[in-house]
Image (cartoon, rainbow, N blue to C red; front, side, top):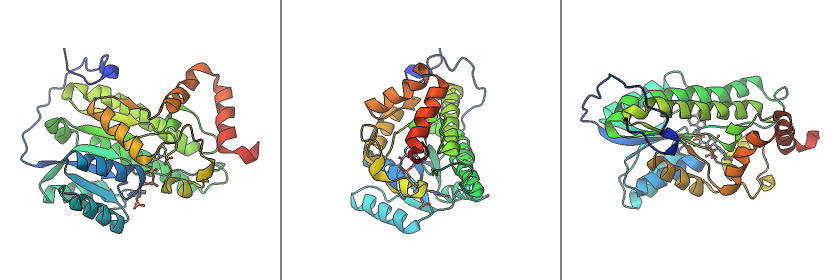
Length: 284
Ligand SMILES: NC(=O)c1ccc[n+]([C@@H]2O[C@H](COP(=O)([O-])OP(=O)(O)OC[C@H]3O[C@@H](n4cnc5c(N)ncnc54)[C@H](OP(=O)(O)O)[C@@H]3O)[C@@H](O)[C@H]2O)c1
């Protein structure tokens, strides 16, 4: 019987890998994208508090440095700061080189960098919508697969920040919702494939989280449904605990868990109308 993690992993892992996990002298590190704000920064604080060494990635170096200082002042190892626009063609390879130069290798990767845009797809800028796919899908896929050997060596894995949007089609944020459906699908499938190697994959599916995300997306925070809303700290705490338990799917908060079951109970056309009304109230 192959060892797998968590309730949802039981059916997986019937196949076996014949690759051997080579020994490495590199030190394990938790690589966090989107660490300059929101959920990524909250993850950094939680992993640091549990004694993990961190590598923080985002574009705003001042914010990353401030977070690294804060963690160091709290008595933890100062995180490595790796400023990068991770959508640049050579960015992932650059991160890999920067880690090798420090004799570090990812045991855990947290893909939290991401953004969305609210509006009719026909009205939103096409280039920006393709940019959502680039960051939330292409880069996330690259960073999910790039270091699986070192993750296997250290018994680590990947936390991909998906969304409650992963469960629905999303008129009013069509590309974003579609990207998050991809993230959930990919993460669950990779969790199944990599179970025999002891590499964990967790899809974290929060509802609304107050922070910079909404200003970028064109969403007024005061309009967020309170029952579904959770802080970045709470979401990261649930994500950390779920990942450590080997859960493939973590949905913070009871109301969000209920919301995620709606597609099984309602017709697809009714689901579409509900999300449209939520995302585009002015168009009703
Ligand atoms: N907030 C919500 O309501 C909510 C709900 C469900 C799921 N999520 C998902 O949770 C994840 C994190 O969201 P959040 O609320 O923490 O958003 P946020 O506060 O806006 O943070 C986004 C992070 O992504 C980084 N980032 C954006 N573009 C980047 C790029 N090209 N290269 C490198 N870093 C980049 C940003 O840093 P720089 O600007 O410094 O580069 C920032 O650290 C996203 O995937 C989002 O879709 C959010």
